[in-house]
Length: 206
Image 1 (cartoon, rainbow, N blue to C red):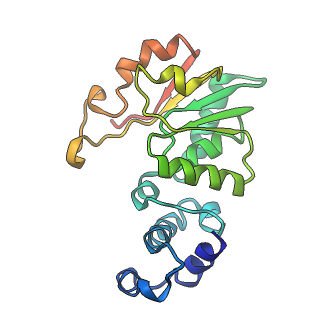
Image 2: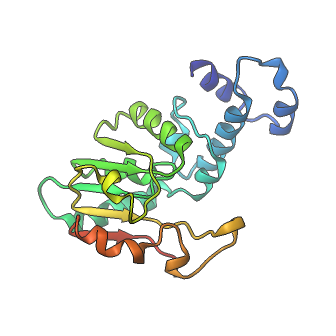
């Protein structure tokens, strides 16, 4: 991993197409991951500056960096969650973890956070990144949030708040608008989650 992070820092301003074409020059580098990290860092600059400035972090999916919360937005969500939870210790489950910016910020105000993400490569990266960020109160889960998986995801995690930011893309990347068309379908999950948590916090497009 040290070789990868050093390579990314050294080539952060390079032409990415040329790096891919010349990948044989660096046989010990996972060039696809390196290019994804470079793309993501460029998108995170000024958006999540703390992550951009930390060379130890890895980013396996450029689209996640494009879609993730900015620091300012994540701070707003964390303050909102704190106001909902009230004083004292409280827990939050983020069922749509993505790159992990929201979970990271929630971890600064909650006693414990559950990060759940359906993409395995993002979960692996999040586990690495949270450790690099010294966010040691985040538990990792790799599941698709659905009625039949909620028990597995929560696995004894007693959440005061469940947070979700449903994906607004359907099959083939087509943009969707109805809540029930988003992934996960929070309308289907609502009653199941309310049986396990006092509050549900959603991010939805107008």
